[in-house]
Amino acid sequence: MTQNNPDLIHQFLEDIESVNADFHQVLLKLRRHFLSFGPDLEEGIKYGGLVFSRDGKLVGGIYVYKNHLSIEFSQGAEFDDPNGLLEGTGKFRRHLKFNSEKDIEANQSEFFIKQACHLKSDCPA
Image (cartoon, rainbow, N blue to C red; front, side, top):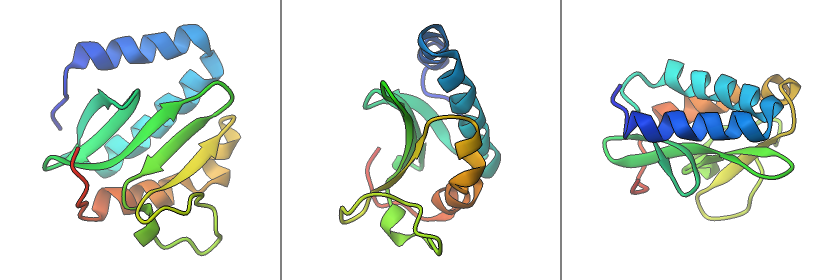
C-alpha cells in the first residue's frame, strides 16, 4: 500500500492523540481494520480526516469531531446493512458514529469496512 504523505498522516495521528487519547485509540483500531482489508489502498489526509482510496477513487474515511468519531463510506448506500446500523440518507454516502472502543464491535465496523474495501468506488478521491 502506498501512503499519501506519511508525515501528514503521522502529524494527524499525533494531533488526535494530544487532544483526545480515547478517540486516538478508536482511530488507530479503525485504521488497522481498513489497512487489513485493503492492501492496495492509498492512505492520506483529506477533507479534515484520514481517507482511504483505491485507484484514485475514495473508499471511505475516518473523521474526528468534538463528541464522536465517524467513518464515512463513499458508497455506503450500496452496502448490505441487515441491522440498519448505517446512518445517512444521501444518494451514496453512509456513516457510522463512535464514542468509545466498544462501539467498534457494536457497529460491526469490520463488516462495513470489508464491504467498502471490496466495492468498486465511483467517487473521485
